[in-house]
Amino acid sequence: MNVQAWTFVMVAASFVLYIGVALWARARSTGDFYIVGGAVGLAAASFFPAIIMGVFSRRMNREGAITGMVLGISFTAGYIVYFKFMHPGLNNSEHWWWGISPEGIGTLGMLLNFAAAWLVSRFTPRPPRAVREMVDRIRIPRGAGKPHELSV
Image 1: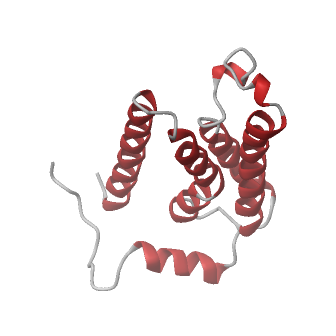
Image 2: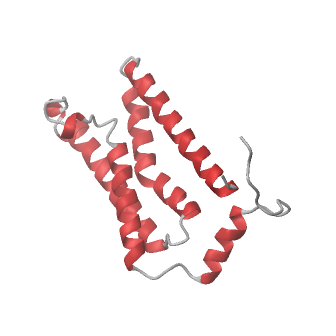
Image 3: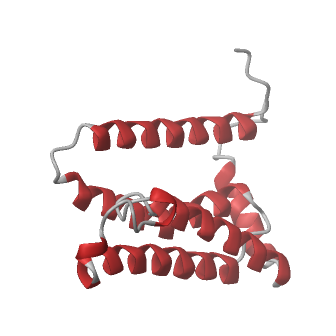
């Protein structure tokens, strides 16, 4: 496995571990977790996909990242505001979409962000050459040498 693939695997594993810890903490929460859950959901729905796709996709562009972030945070914030502030009487699993609480909706917002960013970046101009070269320079640190296979 090359270094880039190994990095992707490590980032993905970290994200899965993070989600697992968040779900475990949610199951054992005392009720105050909803504030942290909402904040993490908003962060995941807004910035996480732009950062990941900016690093791992040479095709990601400004239009795709902005569209994804706006859609992800708007959807997530709208869902949270609807159930927490506008209609708190409906804030139960009977009324949630697919049983997803406002604290957990950030995952769906993140998926919408990924999908919108990917789709828009495919139908708009590629990033300028200078930006693609800058991303390539960031991916391989100075003095790192040539990439090689890791033996596990």
